[in-house]
Amino acid sequence: MQYPFAGSRMMRDLLNRQGHHIGRRHTRTLMKKMGINALYCKPNLSQANQAHRKYPYLLKGLAIQRSNQVWSTDITYIPMAKGFVYLCAVIDWHSRKVLAHRVSISMEVDFCILALNEAIEKYGFKHDLKPSHPIDLSGARPRPKSTLKTQKYLDSSSQKLRQ
Image (cartoon, rainbow, N blue to C red):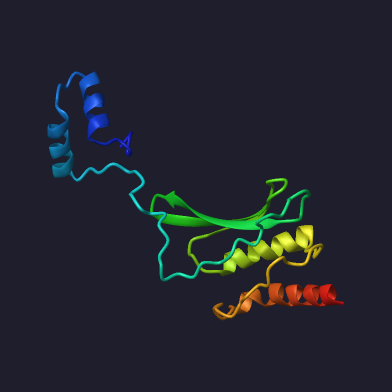
């Protein structure tokens, strides 16, 4: 379909331009019979689930003034002919540079950890500032084996910071 986002109004306009004079309601009826639905954002998708824990925003009031000060990670999906692939990227907030990325066909944590390890190896992991809020990991899930390398690196870095 050339216009997968076309609803009944847009489809009516497209058909009218091609010389098929048809009303919106008839267009909608035909779309229902053929099983055609417009692709668009459904309402209330951004509503938070009340049962989920809300974490504080740790960067509130922090001025990001240099590269390698704040990193973030993002996961998105890329539609393919038969399913999806998932892209994980580690991004530097100041320069907006993608420090590392990985692609996977499953949503397992391993490819995200590999991207983080690659970013740490290429650009280092510096503790210039102490966190403004204590980080609470009491509700965290058990870590998979692939995170051991990252966790050892973080533990050794935090010990150096305490000294």
